[in-house]
Length: 251
Image 1 (cartoon, one colour):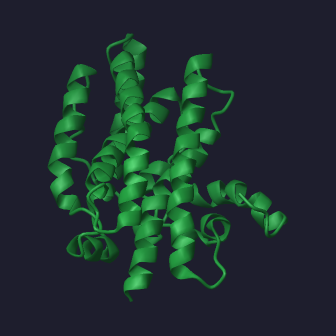
Image 2 (image 1 turned 60 degrees about the vertical axis):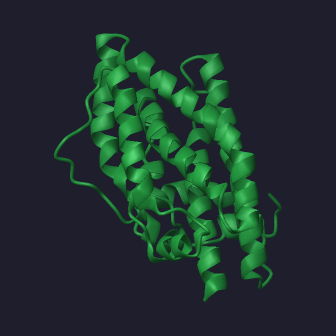
């Protein structure tokens, strides 16, 4: 039971950067300027590097001939445990930045806590990843302020993006049974303790961006328990294509 719970927890840690990394990869060559295009691509590569660490460990934990490739690419849609936020499409640059910002703040808080995990392997991954995520936070927060405090149109587009994406943000803090168990064992954090810090940091950046936090939001949940949006199947069709078309390829 403990082994299965650890495996599931590693999927919870790895699937968010997997799907967000894939979404960012779709933007390669489509950024608004060369420097930003390269930055988004590098963030995608950072996330996939973290994913490899999680899924190499997950393959060792579950055994049965599993590899990082099979863990990443040969699961069915309902077996992915990413939050709904990261699978939202790249509607425009404001949506890309807002989605990134909402995840980055959470990701940074999570990794800071995971560095103290009683699981030494997870702690080591967090120590290795947190410096990259510090940059991700700086990047997305800076762009939030540039867009929000830029032109009337950029503020309007960012306001629209925040109004739409905010409904998916609280799923990050709704613990699954696995996350609750890992918190009790000292492997992962108590997500409820991270939420008020998250809200404060998000609100501070929104104020600096001349935005207000959305009110009366009906929050959406389900991704972490395998109930995804209509976008997920399309993401996996592209993400898994090479591995399914040419079995046993190595990442």
